[in-house]
Image (tube, rainbow, N blue to C red; front, side, top):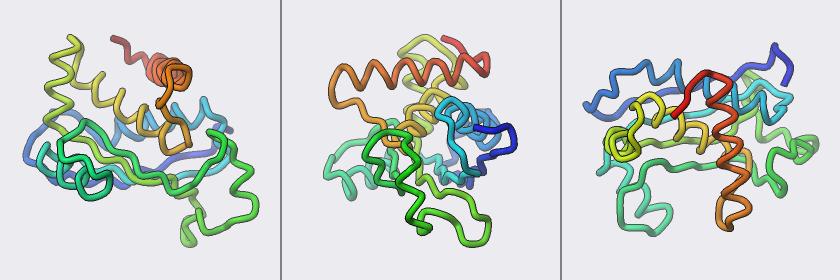
Length: 170
């Protein structure tokens, strides 16, 4: 990704639970780091909603048929056949915002409650957990998955690389 390619994060907080972080700024840094590592050639846009367990539970039930809360949900806009293979975009302008010309990557929803509990469970900071979930979700928006161990290992390596680049370590 060239230095002049940027990502914008449309941030919405629908919970009173505070992570005591600048979630929008942090999410932007992490998203930018992932997109640089994945050589994204476009200015991009991501929507991020910070919610609570009940909010993410409802969306998880509605869209995935899973009647339980989760930590993060990713809703990619682009049906990548191969992760981060941007050739799919050459023939289809519908993945771009007509006003800003940004690539519309999709939506991320994160449960603030799960960020706090998982940070405690894993023994690291709330900042690290939040950033990990953003990096994880960004990779999903770029077509990565973790259904088999090989895919999971690739995602884990890429998540850590994106966070390490920002000095966010375990």
